[in-house]
Length: 446
Image: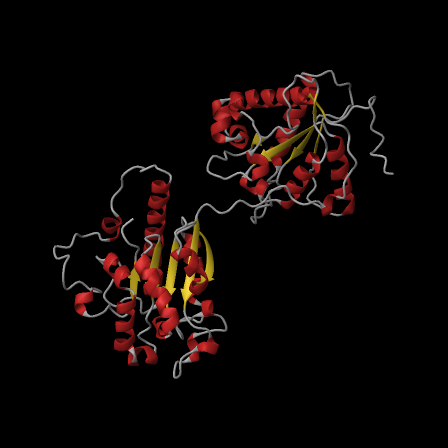
């Protein structure tokens, strides 16, 4: 049986374990220690705890892992400290909740039982979180989100800016000192109000992280309607396709990268968390009556509309006309097959996508040539993605009973000059018998 280090009632235990995410050094030569400010906080917090307790000289006050090295000895030291400390103090930051090691530290500490010191006392967790940076715009993982802790008691500037800003800016010097004092007092109070028995050191490196990654709040689902190389119709050049349907490369030889990869790169530049799917697998969810979970982009290959069964699914999608899904329809005029079948497949697309084309007017595709090049596609995608995002947000507000603030219509946002003639004769309208050679469609009216 493992002796947890000889700790007993006569031996002083550390008041706190400071858990933080190590910041890597900047690439510039001569850059200072990026964790300097965490070390400074640890020193100030240790001094403050000493001032408000009767700890004897030499007694452990806290623990902070200042080593960037890992290995068996490092893991054993962390496990021992986590098994005996009285209070766990995590420094909240986006980097912290993305750190596996920090999640393992949190998990290891919370395996120890916590009891209130008195039967009538309010039970506490033994965790005293610190806002290292403001976290208002970030979604906390469940383990942190369920903690009841009032950060405003440390001062309004701390709650608004985080402790790091208060340390760095001399303007906030007094606010920093107040926050550290109240943090030290909170640590001492929690240690006095709880009974957290010494635990047995765990195998740290085998522990799971306490942080389940939250679902991205700015998702974009990119779906591809195309062929795989093994299902092409007779006579279609296979150079534009890959093993999977999502490998469609319509802009060969200008670009050999799958179109979905271009879309992912552009979506990330817009701040989205994109994911790529086959449209056939997405269709059931899109066509259902359930509330959408994210805006979407459909990258549509007109050649795949020749498959009658699959074309019917696209037609149902068009009739459903979800405004939170925009459609991009590249048509490479440098592709000899596309040139030879331009009229036939253009008419097939117009017949299949009647509602999307109608709701897309006035056109926001940018020029009369359509999406015939990679550059055209890259120009059109941001507008289509943001259009879908706005429609999704409108849908979400309506579903939750909140109309939200009024804003300019999507048509106005993407059509800088009002059109005098909004009826017949517009590019892409049914009256003209088909769309231009490559089209970008927004959603319907939210």
